[in-house]
Length: 334
Image (tube, rainbow, N blue to C red; front, side, top):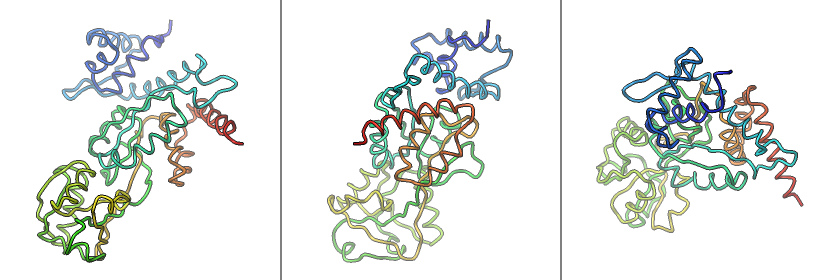
């Protein structure tokens, strides 16, 4: 009998995706020893180690990464065999599964809810999980396969374990209270914020590090009066005259409604980039690919990315999802 009997699948995936035997046991409603025993039994049957045990958790070995790639495909093929996907009148509304996404706090409050709603309209029976965290933490979660896809703003390390696609440029603006003297100007040099009260992101946040590099390069030193981790809270703090801040222009559509004034910095380019990231070492999960497809209407460059990241091992699954979307589109066309 094959070592890869169906019973190992949910246990292996849970440990791989949570990086912990204890957390996998909680999710599966099993005891931790039972989960460990199942993994040891699977490793013994295959004759390879699948996980490296470390003080910070468990991580997939090279053999584990290979199995992880096929485990997701097997999970989807089981769904197809049960009729969730591979039926003559297949519909995207019949697709079931889980999609684990990540986003930085700024995006979680601004863009991601809209994107989640657009995806849910096409795939209403896919359970969406969203984790908000700083960019370094999201990169780590992606690299350890705990998330399928994440949307971040900002920089990645030169040597990174994730692949990425740039979605758009983020141009930052100076955001001030809607009162004199700030609201009497539309354009200012960066030195205008020197010694001004400034509402910043927390220490350690990528945005904070980026701002500090920009300020230091131009010998500008604002006076930090508050450290807040949520852009909506930052906007409200500025509106209540706590200080000024820098935020992406795309986050400021409601600026006048909440009594903010937006100023363009004239002498320093203040830009970062919005990126989608995913693991390099496994094929992009089909539902993550489907999520990128829902974004491609807004970010046309994703169409080329989507074609490039399709993996031949998963062609059947991509075909099923494509057939489902086309069937739904045809059913809604007058």
